[in-house]
Length: 325
Image (cartoon, rainbow, N blue to C red; front, side, top):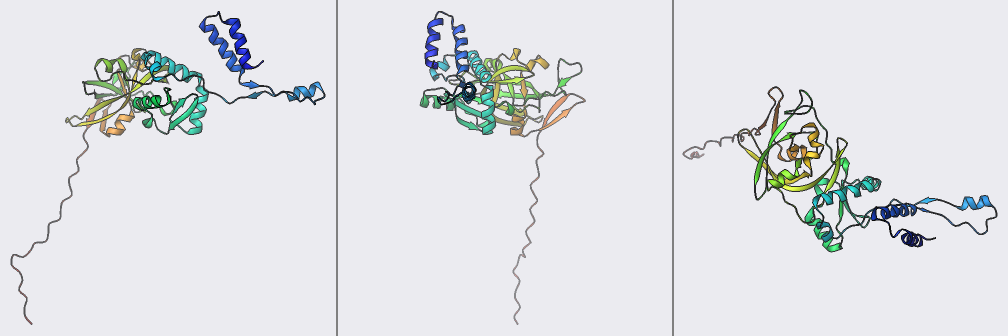
């Protein structure tokens, strides 16, 4: 019986079942598609030959999941988008692992089960305006998956903000987040073991630093054996030195949904942001960590004096008369 006939037969038998049961049936059928049998040779003469002719051949691993239209995607709430992305990433874990490895990619863009674009750095990952334009052109909203190997978070033990461990503190870093609507000053935990900066989504939303956007897609990541979902948002960031000198840039930060349930508050319950290397590498400040006083000082770079110009040779006030021979 062909797969199409099998599908129709099962559908007729279980059409009265609820959606969850039907989904289970579909998974069974999908798994059965991965194996095919080779028909025996009519000229074979024995049962052993017939058995030898039956070969089970695994089909190439396929992506599981269908792209939505932009309109369908935008009707989802932020949490529904995060749940959809998390399920897709979990179901296609091995497929994504193979694609990331084969392409050496930090991210891949998938439409209808095919990688249509990829990049070597998360800095080049497509943003909402680009994915919206692609969806308008193709009719499908593309899924963009980030390679977990490029998102590194290593918890350190040195500290300024007190953690749940006795006698342990996290280095604190004063930082300002801003937008066209507002600015907010906060103190984040400085962790040079983290390649990214992570902030409380709801906090920045309440402070009018960020707002929901058409076509923005979440990403999911694992930290301290705990999953969390985040959206990359474009913000203005400022660091001020002790002398008041500002250093600023506009960049993307990872805004985490349900921050108070995320792994970021397991070590420091009152944390609202984890400041990673990305911002510091861009702003290039001089940071002094005083472990005795448990203070962080942002120092201005020493200004080099301009090189002294050599004095021009003095000119005689009166021209020298040439002697006649």
